Image (cartoon, rainbow, N blue to C red; front, side, top):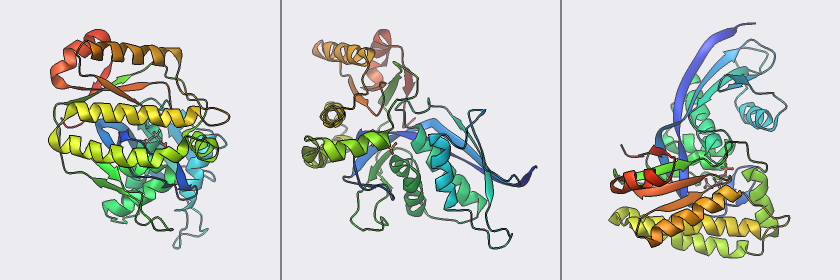
Length: 320
Ligand code: PMV
């Protein structure tokens, strides 16, 4: 059966946290234990088209390939879409959707593909249903799909304030109105394969079993303050060192979980060693790492050529 033609499309950027979100206080609503802060990746992200269809099941395609509805990702998407199926005007009341997403970041390799995917879906739904929601409400809805998606509603620097309310209505992404045109992020792919443990599972295991997790909220509080200061004063070494230390501390909490969670491959460690060695030689180069083996290198435009002579990178300038 054909699509009904009721369709809308939207784009959302991927975002990379400089101060990470790791741990939920409410699993159903994706409410975080701490605040976090990210930078969005300009035109790297997800473009999603959603169409109301006459099929008897949802259809999902990702980069041209069908997503099986029973797969983990298919199920996640369907549960999210369940929130929006009610159709008072066109019984039977349950709508079916065709969701077609194209990403310019590798899927599930710790490159924030689910964040931009859910954010683009919410922006497309907003157009499809003519909700005319403001950014705050769009961010809250995106958070319900994937926590970090609430930051992908905005470009540039974004802070996700953890909030206090049980219903999560005060837990959403806010833009930090600062630009830093010289800032570069280099995506260093050491492995494009899907990660073997989802951030959702790893996060929960860390909260429940890691003895190091109790130190995490204080670490985040200090790092957030330092990163905001660094952004405001354009103090790149403070930004780089804080972001790198924050990522390493997050991975430290995971290593202390049981069973342990380790996203690093030998190539990840080798790249870290190389970055540390170059820094000792005077290069202002730092990294951050998410729930996958790949690194994101942080440096300034003035060092681009030097950094490129050492690494094969896909370079993004978030503010250009
Ligand atoms: O939003 P999720 O469930 O994909 O978790 C994101 C977790 C990290 O990428 C590791 C950190 C972050 O703040 O983006």
